[in-house]
Length: 230
Ligand code: SF4
Image 1 (cartoon, rainbow, N blue to C red):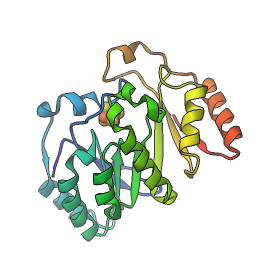
Image 2 (tube, protein in one colour):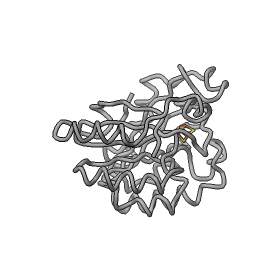
Image 3 (cartoon, rainbow, N blue to C red):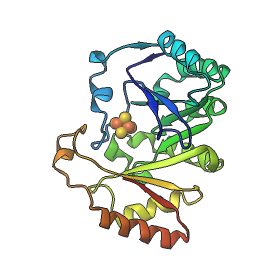
Image 4 (cartoon, helix red, strand yellow):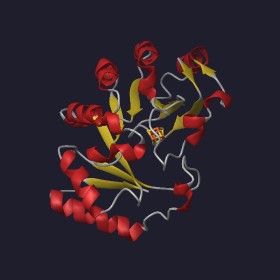
């Protein structure tokens, strides 16, 4: 498997664990707020990190690192290579986290047993996936969420709050879809580096308005459901 980016040590990517984070390039979605546009659009200009280099690092760091996270881009575009990579990673005793936009249900199911924790991006209400370039993928996203929600301890569901797409009504609709999740992580949109030009003119919600949205959804769900990661 070939990677195009690598954060060798992360204290935040795998909850409570020290992880190394590998990035694949390429994505089938076009979220305007995407903050990794180079991984989506310019993959040929990025460095190539071969598996051998990663494994030699992982062998040396056994006992110092706990987990390997694969993100992107969309990792499930490479599900077959991913499976053989993860088998070897698990063989070294590491925990594994894989992020996905939820658009490849069969590949998600095939990899399910190899992954300890899934990071699933829930972008917009299911009937609005065309906004992120995934209109034809909404059934897959729905099935991925359903499978994930039947194992809530093995998934993190996350949403980037982007003002043109998210208001109280859309967030209510999304909350109803995933109300069986343990928590729903929100991260605020940042406009430093985005996939679309329009996104660079969008003002993120203020911390106080996000808190109002969070409190309203939490009250309606009846527990501390939304967690902000600002
Ligand atoms: S934010 Fe959207 S476009 Fe960017 S990598 Fe994730 S799914 Fe792809």
